[in-house]
Image (tube, rainbow, N blue to C red):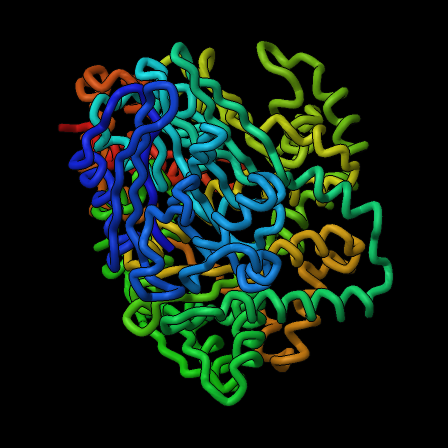
Length: 637
């Protein structure tokens, strides 16, 4: 786990500036740093820098930037290639000097070229590679976007600047801190900004599963993006060879998960696992403990003082059953609240998923004992675990009735229509007539409020909902929503949250369920093995029962959530009101002063109106608060 940054430009960004950019990411890599500037093609200059968190080959031989022995290829890299030892055996002609996966990337590229090399990699990675012979510069990101990679399309300087985070770009000479206002309504609604967009104009996230090739001439820079892995394409390809026998599917999936977990336990530093007591983290911990044998696995969980929310007692029972060396930390509301002020510093793009706070706390706890932690992330998306998937299945069953209700609902009632007077839950089904967004169930008033908060947001904004569902070519709404979540929520929210929260404490987080072979096999499995008679994650749960008694796992989730409404109407009230002050908003020029102040005041007066109306004022107000906090930290100066 590291942080990388650099550039390929017609101008020269001095080495001292590149080092300063690199050092903004010191938490990502506290063990070592390297920065170099060298001559590129056609009058261009190239800079490469890396902050290193040493995991494999702790010697200086893993230092970056790393170069091929003949000086042809230079590389900076963030991540882990878990099958690097197997790939290395296919490269006997390369004169390896280290035992780290970084050098395998260079050797694989030289033998197979960029596309074939990347297709061989099983892991999480983001890297920049320059080939002096072909004069091509590459940016590459892993299949699901576990590792972040931003780039600034600096066309005035005919070049590109890249980094693992936004902070190095902000610190780059000449960077324009111009807010891309069009993405704000989508951020307010979803609480994160999905690739390819970012908060800044002319700055982009390289999309998961993509290779960006940069070529230069004396007059221009040419960018070419190529997708080597996409959720939809791989899903349909795997469906050509479906697995319809349940026992076969279970046995093969279990074997793949065992292999994926073993891969992720390759480390030259202490390793442990997050353990919440839920199915996914318990299964991953069980697989890791099985791999270790008699050596106890370090496991970590957060407990809550409020008994009605606390699941730490179940995590401890699971750990005791597995024979893990378990550590737990009980926290209160104050422990979480104390982290609110630091959110912008470590989440350098606005991120308002409040679960980032307990994620930071468990990362801090784990880092006191280990440098690498396994997690159960992605089990819900790939194996149908979220509650929304129940609602999606139900909505598809009632879609014909919803269509009829929509038709009848067009009867005018004064200045409104009959449909506008339906109960909210009926409106959700009756108004759900747009195929491109059919599984997203957005209350129209809530989407409208997100748009109205932003100046010109109703006319000039990217679509608040993701208009891509029909492109999946899947008739089953549940599967379609799962694919959508894999493309959006998983990389844009979950993985970004875990990356920033763990990196705050220089902790590497690894996700066995995001193993390439596990993901691709999951697409072959009959969907009824995932959602079976209303039981979500059926096959994963069945595998977990091979290790852990059912009574330790099969219980209702207690559903802890950060008390946002209480905070925003209590200790954060004056700060929120100041952010919504019309004079401040007019000066800022992003949010509609009157509408935004009215919405915040309505929330202060009434709180959440509740699910019966579809309103969720605390969610919108928290998104707004987090953005303004971020804005003050980075641009308020």
